[in-house]
Structure formats: C-alpha cells, structure tokens
Image (cartoon, rainbow over all chains, first blue to last red; front, side, top):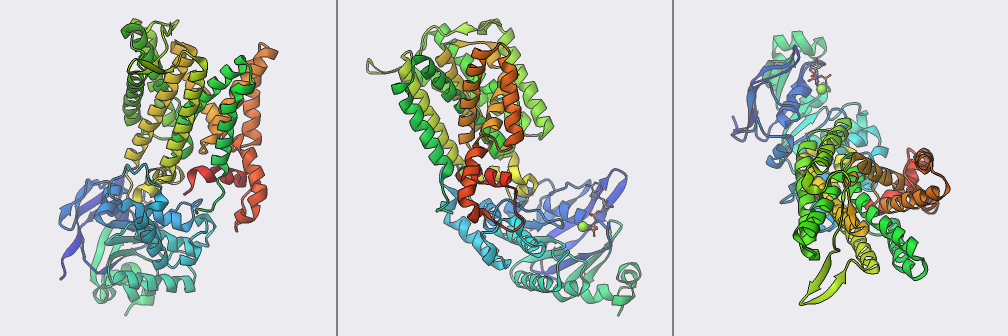
Amino acid sequence: MREPILETRGLSRRFGGLRAVSAVSLSFEAGVVHAILGPNGAGKTTTINLLSGDLSPSEGTILYKGRDITALPVHARVHLGIGRSYQKTNIFPELTCLENCRLGAQARLPGWLNLVKSASHYGEIGERAERALALCGLEARAGAAAGTLSHGEKRQLEIGMTLATGPDLLLLDEPLAGMGIEESRRVVDLLKRLATDHTLILIEHDMDAVFSIAERITVMVNGAVLETGSVEAVRASPAVQAAYLGEEHAA
Amino acid sequence: MPNRPLVLPILFALLCLGIALFPLVGDTFYVRLVAKIVVLAIFAMSLDLLVGYTGLVTLGHAAFSGTAGYVTAALVNKAGIVDLPALLVAALGAAGAAALVIGWISVRTSGIYLIMITLALGQMVFFFFHDVAFWGGADGVNLAAKPELTMGGVTLLDLADRMVFYYVALACLVLVYALLFMVSKAPFGQVLRGIRINEGRTRALGHDVQRYKLAAFVIAGLLAGLAGFLEVVRSGFISPAHVNWHESATVLIVVILGGMGTLVGPVIGAAALVLLEDWFANLTVHWKLFVGLFVIAVVLVLPSGLIGLAGRIGALRWSQRLRRPGAQSAVSKGAEVAREGAGDA
Ligand SMILES: Nc1ncnc2c1ncn2[C@@H]1O[C@H](COP(=O)(O)OP(=O)(O)OP(=O)(O)O)[C@@H](O)[C@H]1O
Ligand SMILES: [Mg+2]
C-alpha cells in the first residue's frame, strides 16, 4: 500500500439531531483515484466539506500528508494543495472563464497584500490560469462570461478553477452531474488525465464512470462507511449489493 | 483586456479638468461649493471600496472621517500644531486605527448584521466625541488655525488660502482615485471583487477573505480619514454631527446615487447631492424632502446610479461587443459598461 496523503479518524458531523457523517475513518493513498459512492443523503458532500474545511467536524481528526489539519480553515488547506469542486456549480458568473481561473491561480502568489502591480502583469497568474483552462477544455471560451456557459461547460470550469490553485489532492463532488453523454465522456477523459499526477477523491453517481476511473471505492450509507476497498472487492461485497448497487451492477 | 475602452478614467479626467479650470470662471461662492464637492467625493470614493468593490455595505463610515477631523482639531487647537505632514499622519493614523478596530469586529458579520454592527460601533465613536468634554462638547469646535506646509522657513502651502486648499483637495481627489484604481486592478482588488460576487468560492480558491475585508476596511478608513482632515480644514469647524450616522448615511447615498463600484460614480454623486441641496435650499425650506425624492427617482430609474447614464450612452456604442448569449437587460448592460474602467482587469 502506498503512503496515505489524507487520513480521517473518527470523523463525524452532526446537524442538530442528524448525524450526517458518523465516525468515518478512511485512508486515501497518494496518486490513487478514490471514489465515494452512496445514495442521496448518505453524507458524501458533507464528508467532502469536512475534508476541504468548508465545514468543521463535530468530532474526529483529519491528517493531510501526516499533518493534523482539522483546525485549518479552507483557504489554508488550499495553500497546502487541497482543491475542491462543488456539486452545485459555484462560479463567478459575471467574470470571464479566464478571470474565474485567474482568481484561483492568484491563490499561489507569495503574500496576499499585493496592492500595486496590476494583476494582469503577473505572468505566473496568467500562465497557471490558461493552463488550467486548457486542461479543463475551455481554452476556446476563455473570454466568455462564465454565466453564459452551457451547463456542461460550467461543470468543466468548476474543475478548471480548482486546478488553477495548483492542488495535489482534488476533491470532486459529482463532476459529471447533469452532463450529457458527450460532455461526460470529455470530463471522464479529463479526470483520467488528472489522475496521472493528482490524487482524486471523487463523488459520482455514474457507475460506469466510477468503475472506469476509480481504483478504490468507499460506499457510504446514512453517514457511515459501509464498505471500502478495491473496486473488485466493493463490487463483490454482498452488503454493498444489498444496500446500494442493486441487481443491475451485481456480478 | 488591454484594449477595452477606458470610459470611466476618461470621464474622471474630464471631471478633474473641469474642476481645475472652474475657478477661472466660477464666482467665489461656487468655487467653495466645488471644494465641498471634492472633499465629499473623496469620502464617498473611500466608501466605494467597501460598498461597490467588496460588497460590504456599512453604515458607520463617518466614524473614520470624524475621528480624523477631531484629532486634527485637537492638535491644532490644544497643541498648536499646524504642520501639514504631522497633522496628516496623526489624522490618518487615528482614522486607520479606528478602522482596524471597527473592521476587525465587523468583518465577522455580513449583510444586514454588518450594517447594524457598523452603525452601532459608529454611534459609539459618535458618543465618545459627543460626551467626552475634551473634544469640545455637543456644539463642536472651531479650528483655531489652518495647517501649512513649511520647509526651511518658507511656506510652501498655506491651507488658509482658499485657492491653495482648493487645489490641494483636487490633488487629493486625483491621488485617491489613482490609488483605488491601482488597488482594484491589483491581485488584492481582484480578490475583493471575488468576495463581492461569490464570497464562499473566493475562500475555497485559497483566499483568506476575512483578512482581505479587514484590509479593505483599513484602506477605506485611511482615505476617509483624509476626507475628514480636509473637511475640518475646509469648513474650519467640527462637531459631533460630523461623526453621526446621518453623515454615514449621506455618504452611502452619494455612492449609490452616483454608481457603486465605479469610483467616478461617487464623484458624480457628490456633485449631484451638493448642487441639489444648494439649489433646493434656495427654493424651499422643505429642500431635504426634494433631495430625498430625487434620490428615490434616480434609484428607481437608474439602478446603476447616475453613472448609468454614461453607461447607457456607452452601451449604444459598444452594444455590439457586449451582446452575449443569455442577453442582459439594457440596464445591466449600462452597469457593465459603467464598471468596465473600474473593476475589471
Ligand atoms: N447544512 C446542513 N444543515 C442541515 N442538514 C444538512 C446540511 N448539509 C447536509 N445536511 C443533511 O445531511 C445529510 C447528508 O447530506 P449530504 O449533502 O452530505 O448528502 P450526499 O451524500 O452528498 O447526497 P447527494 O447524493 O444528494 O448529494 C442529508 O440528510 C442532508 O439533508
Ligand atoms: Mg452531495
């Protein structure tokens, strides 16, 4: 087993009386595509929110590259190389695609109080933003206002902005949600390309996509981990078949 | 986009040219009125950084200008200091410190709570100057002398001279505009714009939004301090009314009236408000009512402020370039053109 890039220990999150995430202890290996599956309301997005820092856990700890990051805010985790995309498209509609990415690329500037030189004169911002835009396949739409993109393009931009922050670990919440077949295929290709030099933690309902990309799978139900392991092991697990995958995917 | 038309900076340059030449033709009364406009414009521009660029609507901006004004008056009257640089440093330092404290508390909130907390903190500053006898009480104090800049016994600038003050204030207006324009284009300003459009995503892209908001508060507070300093020198008088929330509301109205997030809008808003007040005050004792009606009419007809008029004219010329799928209304097109020279890189 390769060394873990991210580990959770007894991670829980309550919303009032509801335990959205319950005692989740997982280990994510560096360089591996790890998919999280589960029915609606299983706690997948909440888990990603805990890993990214958008939410703080009620209990438990998160270790990133061996370091306890449980108390770190979102922006600090981005600087450590954790990037996330959102299930519900979360972009800057009135800015162009390139500007959306530039804002991500800017996160890696040294210092934050950059008041004098125009942002457009920072070569490194432009380069990183353009690279991210090219990677997510929106090169041709660089100057278009993000709000005018098609749904599929917005989903691509969602990933592109995250890439522009230069992450090592990508937390992708249903990147294929609502995409057509052709768009899905493009994004799956993108994810495969990203997988060569990133660690991916991926929530996805599209089983075919998951099985074609992921090496490891975790199945969550009611906030808890039902099963975790290699694709084959999880597919073969009777508990998973009973609880989630159903007959269609039963071996 | 380097070849975008710089509508707003050009408009600003024309306004400044007009202000610079005005004393050659205008009579003394109106020259004084324009000086008042210039100071109010600086004040409003400083608030525009918070309201228009960062999306932080506050109702306590007079705390910063008022603090600077009171510190200036105290140093002149009680310590006999008239040295311009020393007074400026003290006034801006005090305003900046107030902004640091008020900002530090306020940036933890947003929306209606931000309005309420800046209002409350601003009123605390008001009562501080109102109730502590040292500052001169409810009636306010006159400035015993005007600041001057001397070097080796030679007086370079004497702000007691109305024309000297006029051009110093105009120079400050240009300086503040240039500064805020620069900041808005810099990575810092890009993050502020991100916060205004989508704060959560800005944070998730790795920006410590709290820290950016606080820095915006301090910059805005410092520049409001400059306006407060100029105002006490201009009018030769300061009273608690200068720190009261009415003053904060007025400057917010100026920003909204002129056009948020444009820097030029606040200048136009300041001109409109001062000139209208003067005009209506000559016509009727109910002038405040008419000024209020005018403000309401502008907000209803021109949601992007008076600058939207310029924007609409611009929209005609560049409508081709702006026509995008998912067509926007003519009004938002106007707003977009209006923003162009200011917010976007
Ligand atoms: N901010 C919140 N406040 C209260 N309850 C919440 C909040 N966020 C999520 N929940 C609840 O927590 C549970 C888990 O939600 P979560 O969004 O993590 O599920 P999910 O696995 O991502 O589902 P889906 O597949 O529909 O996206 C749900 O019952 C949801 O209603
Ligand atoms: Mg979800």
